Each structure stands twice: as structure tokens, then as C-alpha cells.
Length: 114
Image 1 (cartoon, rainbow, N blue to C red):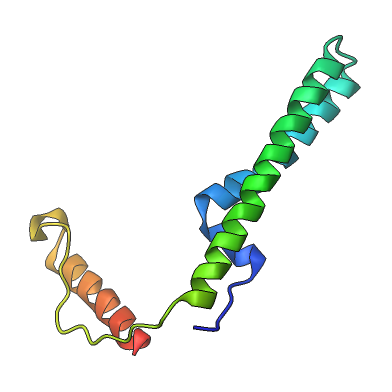
Image 2 (image 1 turned 180 degrees about the vertical axis):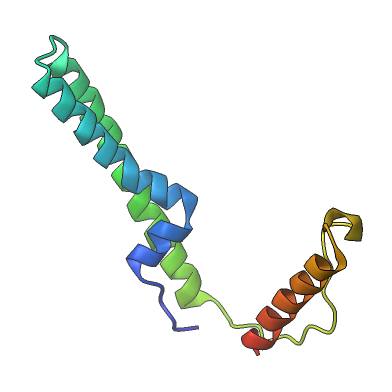
């Protein structure tokens, strides 16, 4: 498998990578607000925010590298799905049309993967 996902795709898809991306931004925004409000404990928060932002950035880099290595070392498995198992009982859907719509969507994704 040689199809590498883009960094933006990894960040928007993977929850841990997304949090690792957002934490430094939120920390910088909170620090800017504290500086604008001229708070007394700005330096203490700045050190804490810097440490947390570095750790979050490290987690982001780790997740990106982990996902990229899965795509580099992975093997594509081609399958043919002959039936679709729905995790919900049929009574979960409001009407027969909703059930049919779910089956059509699932069948479309199975055919698209071929």
C-alpha cells in the first residue's frame, strides 16, 4: 500500500492527532487573552502552556508517523462482501424507507470499494 494520506487528512480524521493539533492553538489563545487582560499569573501560565503545547505537538507528530507507517508497511486486503450486517435492529429505523436507504448506502460503499 503506497497511498499516503495527507497531514490535514490525518489531523481531521484521527481524534488524538486533532487534539494534539488544537491544544497548542488553544493554549496560545488563552495566553494571549491573559496578556491582553494583564493578569498577574501570566508567566506561570505561560510555562505550563508551553510544556503542554510541546507535549501535544509531540503527540501530534507521533500519531502522524504512526499512521504513515501503517500505510507504508500495510498490505491491501481486497474483499467481496456478500451481505451486510446491521448493528441496529430493524425496529431502530422509523420506517421501511429508512431501512431501505441504509441498505442502499451500505451497498453503495461495498460496491465503491471494489
